[in-house]
Length: 334
Image 1 (cartoon, rainbow, N blue to C red):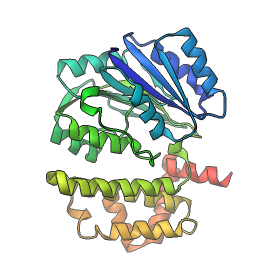
Image 2: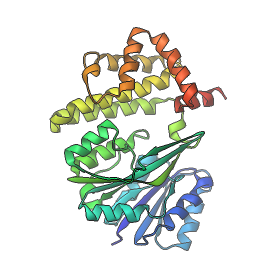
Image 3: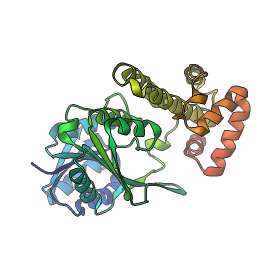
Image 4: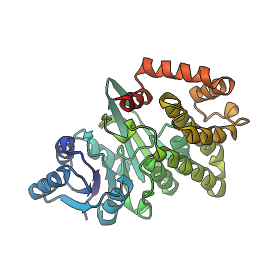
């Protein structure tokens, strides 16, 4: 049995794939298997995966018709034999000691999940999530709270998971947005302890063609079905987290509202009305909830007062900060 299984879903990433794979193969640990899942790429990504496999016997390549990132990760999970599981996006770059640190911490603290800090690189902007060189541990409840509050990133790429803890958990195949959030929610439910070393060890690269830069679509509306499901799950199984789950649902609705307003509420009129109705359910909730983001509290208060004024301020702020919402709009106009 390998110590670590690293799963990389690959779809049309040929121009970035070599750098990503090389950063994995150069890890300071060597006892791992690298599972590359070619999800029906139409460029030469599949061929590049096969070429790497010929050179390194730690690499396993799976070819499948295009089914989406969740299905690709699930395909990797089905064959993974490592004691721990990690996920990497095919256009990102890992620091050499990343998995050495994550595995060391998961053993040292007898944890089920181990996390590290992330450098998020987008066109014209770099954001650090971590970088203070501190270590923190979370109980099961603290981990769930951390996910809802944003202290724990929704992503999978900054984490490893003990296989025996998450072996029954799969990604929701209908999701290509927020699929990480669903997986992490289920994983944190199953975990007894999580450890977070906030040393920056992963570069998350946001490309112009990435899903995070894509125009608003029904993929984002499906994410709202997920957040509602999480609220319902908490009502049934995790009653002490219901208020946090509701705040999480509110925050994600606000993110979608902002995307629509920057692009065009007329173009997405039906979805705009659905989100407005969702938010109205929180009219007596959002102001007094400590887990609702302050900017969304203020934003929704202004939106309720004047949607037009809020939209103008939002567009001005998006232009000022070069936000992803604005980048989506620019792509639509090209």
